[in-house]
Image 1 (cartoon, rainbow, N blue to C red):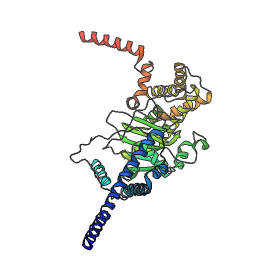
Image 2: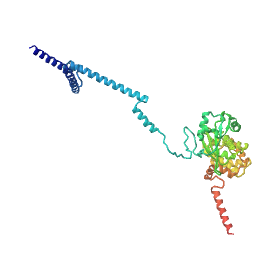
Image 3: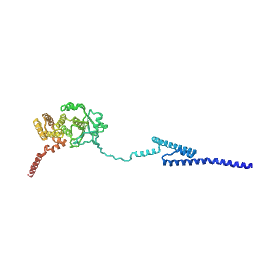
Image 4: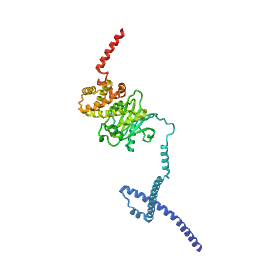
Length: 414
């Protein structure tokens, strides 16, 4: 009997131990199942109602299920926090350059920025870029440009600031950093007063020398070619005529100011630079006559209602009459002036006529060659030709040429 009791107790003990081992596993599985079921129910209720009542669900599933839900939510929160930390880490890695993705991107960028290898062909001709900024030019401008192999001579205003000088050189097409490569002379305000005080008020001349000039040798027979930058008073035609009077031949010239200026004093710089270029000293009487001419021509523009082109043509016409016909005395020169006023329909005061007489007498004393004068300022005299006012041109000249041809024909018969 006792043996049977002991056997039963052993069986019960073994069963109890077996149940104790199985129950935890069963409880864990039940908890997971409950949690999954709870999450599904929450999702379904959220879809249906737009919100989930977690507290009610927790009470419905019992304490074990509630504990499982809390653990699950904590796990999700930890996972979310870990994800956020991971994003921050990626950003920091990107900032510091330690991210693999960022490294790949930089490698791609570096590959895109790598210099092109191989032979590069460049144009041998210098690109001529337009000058930027507010620059006053002229329609009749000859578009003089400094070429790659040109060797210009410069006459710079002595009172230019470093910035103004850089502006002037830029307008001329000269690199300021390479100024030492060029032959440079300076034009001072004292020089301006020396040659202009007799013709202009001191206040008009001013106290600073700013006009600057670049000059190069032109091709034989090309005449005087001029471009102007920021010159508001003197015209291309005025410069050509006056420089031809001074004896310049076959030159390419750029006259420039750092901002719009009259440019009257630039004539001095042009003649000084020309002298340096050719090695021939410009005579004082030639320089004086040229300075006088450019001032008087400018004053004639006032008499023509501001028509500078007509003033240029009137002066060219009078120079033609004086030089070609070798007019020397006051009477013959005054007659030429009166005829010029009629041709151009210009009314001059006695004072203006007197100034014209003075400058034309100076030009007459220079013994200029008519053909040289005409060729150096050819476009001016071409304009006179179009007006029928050029010597040996017009209807009279054509009739004379016709009669001469007839005479030559009959001479050939005998």
